[in-house]
Length: 115
Length: 115
Image (cartoon, rainbow over all chains, first blue to last red; front, side, top):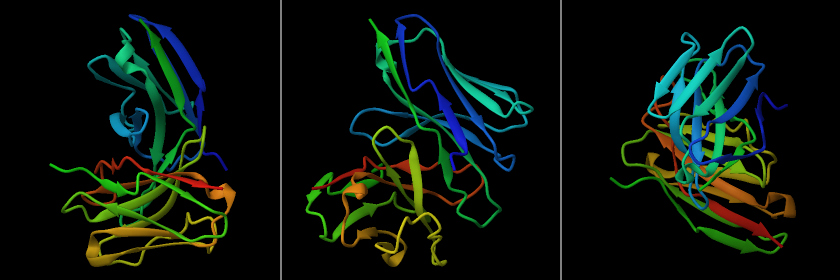
């Protein structure tokens, strides 16, 4: 059962444009929503994360928008650069204290920023 | 400081053979996770270790998969009688603790190809 649905699968943006990646979830027990960036041959690296008690979080050119009622969250990359070309994964975490609290990942978005 | 390291980086094996994948977490991190990343898919949780507690094996896809963590540090993921569907990138992550907002740091992964 895919608990986090991510779209689009691939995205091509011109340099300077805005990249938008969307995720939707079903499990209302999720309480932490990170986005990971992965370059070829590397492991995923945390980019930015949000908790459901806020609707937006911004760090530099990266912004997470969170809609709790719709169970959706999105990543916006402003002024996209060729160096942003990578695979982006949304994720969600749940579980009681003391449990694994493992991440449930979306299927990933391959972002290409054209120079 | 040193990040999470994994070895080997690539492993090609014949169907039916056993393989061992190794993970060295960040020193001092008590929580360790194994994930599997299949082509075009997100990361799938496999197993979790926290200190000396019994591991959470709920994500292991079959009894051919097992893992151990010696001395609360290095972990080995073993796949017995490998099948072609086991071909994937196996990622290890560690964090200071499970839960809270402790970030999971990922290693570069081991790419397993079963021929």
